[in-house]
Image 1 (cartoon, rainbow, N blue to C red):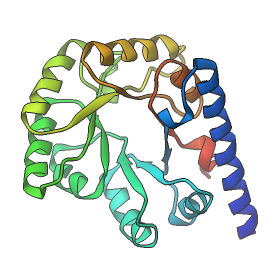
Image 2: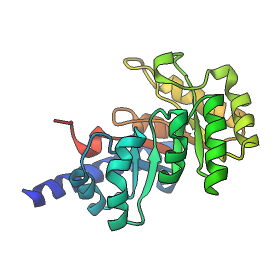
Image 3: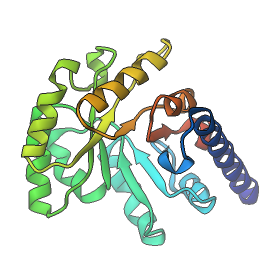
Image 4: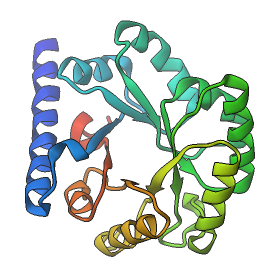
Length: 225
């Protein structure tokens, strides 16, 4: 049974890599320009290990507390893993996030800029961050309002936070391509080269519109029980 699970993890990973390669070919991009972030939220260490053993090395978690419970032990066994925070971050968890994650995709408000700036200074650790943009004007998803993005980028840089790109979660049930294209333009307008966009159902579209990081969960892990 364990071998079958490992094979299915490997086959799912291979299928996603094939999807990435196809999208890159259509867009005239190099496969190496796209980082696959395997979103392991609500999946246990056993499932994560199967993907690691199949070759995946970059993972994403939505919550600091869940990541703290799983990843210290996993990283002892697999020290080359890169861990990204792809979900909302509470300001009071900033120090924990800076200690645990190699990249944060959800910088979205001035209070979090202040908390992360202080946490990074104390830790002596500069964690690359994406500014999450509220492209669909949905407050419940978090994200910086579009008109406030330049000011947030500027304040983050003043606080010593390395801002590397923009991130978005388009509204459900709406064609995502216009939102991806908009985020690409917004990033270029602000001199940023990286885009975290695209999930299991639309990562190929995101890649064709400039994504450098795709956050894929279900296509890699299967449906949660």
